Length: 278
Ligand code: KIV
Image 1 (tube, rainbow, N blue to C red):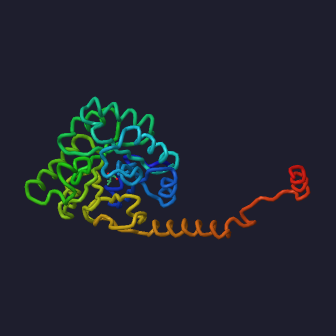
Image 2: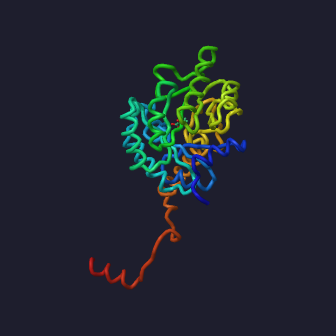
Image 3: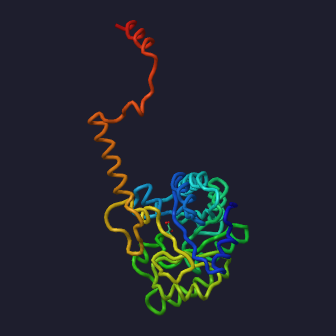
């Protein structure tokens, strides 16, 4: 099968085919996502937390995004790869072009995602004019979490109207899709009806054209509470912990390795070497 394109993703909306997107941060997760048939992968700046152990997405650098995009690209043959632009890397049009050039040429992603509404329109316009497919990100935008908090966004009339305006403006500016994070489901569904580009929800209800989730949430890699919008489709973290603990106990009680995991050699040669060293 050939590689998915932005046009294919837009066609999915036109054909009312729900779009499943998931984050991937490295070669092995990209291989798995590929086997599972995910049409669009996000090298999300959530890697700051789940891969690098930071508290927020803010410390991520362009270099980190390039490195993780390279890993994902090596594991993927068919998905459209969208890469997040880090915090403040698109503060001006010039910054945006500079960061986009590095992420796409060195990292190899096919499209970029950036957060914000009307305020990022000049950057989206500039990038799309230069041939860069851009995905917008509205609602709970984690790069502005110190300003807006990590709560449900756009609940009151004024904020809801602004969200609608932002989505329409991003579409006009050339965005090929928009991630809509943690907003009321009815509002996200209305926006999905008002725009022609796909609305990819995360915590934005079933009325979106597609869904995006964080790899670690879907697979249940960390213990403790997952975000409300996430569904754990497996408990891989628990399975991994059990497997590693089993390995440790097998090494400690000498039941691993066995002859099945070992190579052998000619006993006479070995005896001769041993004699020489006695
Ligand atoms: O970085 C990320 O993982 C994201 C998703 C939450 C949409 O932007």
